[in-house]
Every structure is written in structure tokens, then in C-alpha cells.
Length: 183
Image (cartoon, rainbow, N blue to C red; front, side, top):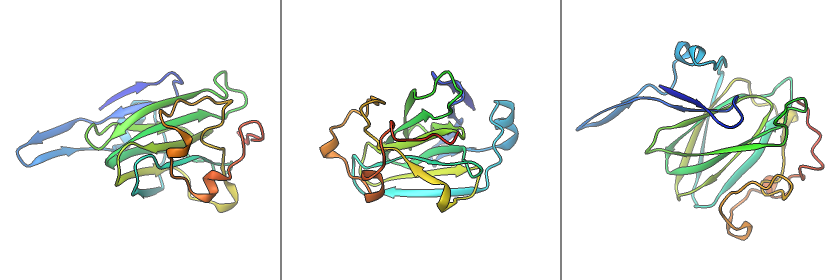
């Protein structure tokens, strides 16, 4: 397993080893001991699976407020995404900064996003499936979001806003300026 810190070092790109032969491949995508040794000490309690039929579907930017904040381990099992994490920790020197990584079923790379970050992704292919582990259960009252294309965040998604597919919730999300970080 290769673990690389991104420009915000708490966000990590995790690439498990793949053992390939003429049948396909085998990969250990999660191992608590290996993750702890790499500095990722999340106790995952729930797995989520999302399917997006269309290329250019945006899901995010989402978070759960404390005490239900969630760390996530995100991987793509079909297709590809541009995955984005924004630091929402008020006392952090990287508050309001973002990092991104391309994740695909082909590469097997995963993104670890700690609690205290907004998270979202853009599908780069139709019929994309994303599976992610979280270290806290879903809590509707703690659920929140920020608009994906807020100009003050200036995230380079590589797509025009008119081309994306959004949920009603994500389309109505507040701006970064109106976001009161609970972190």
C-alpha cells in the first residue's frame, strides 16, 4: 500500500497493491493495521455506495457537523471521478483551501478525507460507482453542504456549470461565505 499526503497533508491518497494474473486482480483495499501504521486511525462503521448514471454528475460539497462528523475513505469501483476535499477547520492554516485527486476503478487509488473537511466529487464517466467508508453514522440533523462551484473557493472542476447534473439539495446549497463552519 502506498500512502501519499496531498498539499493538505491530512488528506491522503492511498493506493493499495494489486496482484494481477490472467483472471484479473486481487487487492486488499482496507486493513486497519496497515492504515494505522500509515497514520490513518479511523474506526470505520458504515459503508456507502453511490451510482451516477451520467458523466458530469456532481455530488457535494457535503459534511456532517460534530459530534457526528465523518472521516471518509473513498474509492471508485466503476468509472472515474474528480474527488475534492476542502478544509473547513476554522483553526487550520489551510482553512478554505482544497485538494483534488482523480480516482478510478482502473487505478484503484482511494482518498482519505478526515473529519472537518467538505467533500464532493464529479463523475468523469457515465455509470460511475463510488464506495466509501465513514467513521460515524449518518445523522440527518448534522448533514450540511456548500455549493460545489462557489467562486470564492475557485475549485478547478474542469467542467462548465451548465453541463453538470446536480440534486436539488446540492443545487440549493449555501455559499462558502454563508457557511458557518462547525469545525
